[in-house]
Length: 89
Image (cartoon, rainbow, N blue to C red):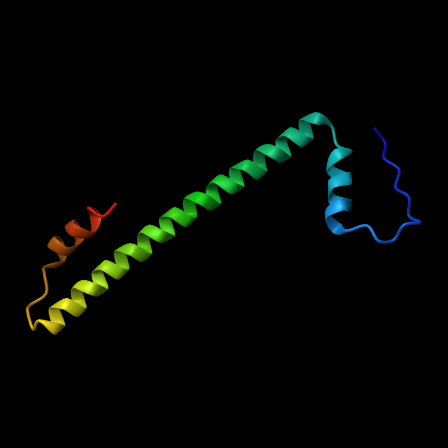
């Protein structure tokens, strides 16, 4: 399927140009693009969840350090602290 573009209108946005290009592709190519887009979005969501988990874990560890300093108590062993941090959900 050939697509003709009217160059007389010079105000086509980048999104419109991209959409026109996508629409001019075969169904199999459009499906492949959609699949890739969905995989990318799912990966981004998973990355965000992992980052939130890491931030939460670091914050909990830092609070333990601060608490230990304020109370002038020895810090927990690394094994105990890691075990507690792993139990965070």
